[in-house]
Length: 134
Image (cartoon, rainbow, N blue to C red; front, side):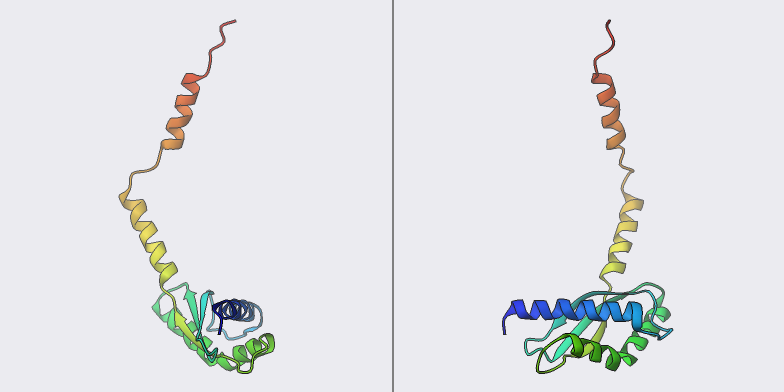
């Protein structure tokens, strides 16, 4: 199976699942969930959906449990959108990439000095501008 077809299927699954979570899913446990990317197996029987969940550890576990209990509903939505012989079985995986990026950014902001280059450049431009000699 071509990798282009797998990428198109993964993108379609991501769109369907993201919109279904945002608009149609009524489970109160599922909150602050973002679908980051989807991996589809070469035979298109399994789709791993990587999600980022904002909140503490318990909120993440609750949201992930809510997503896993809604798998049948979401899988039906995916099956309606994809025109394939088999509807991929959905598996939800917690993605720590966004949270780790936020932690690294916070640490860098604490360690690095503030960036004043824009202010310094503005001062240099004012000094170099021609004075009114008229």
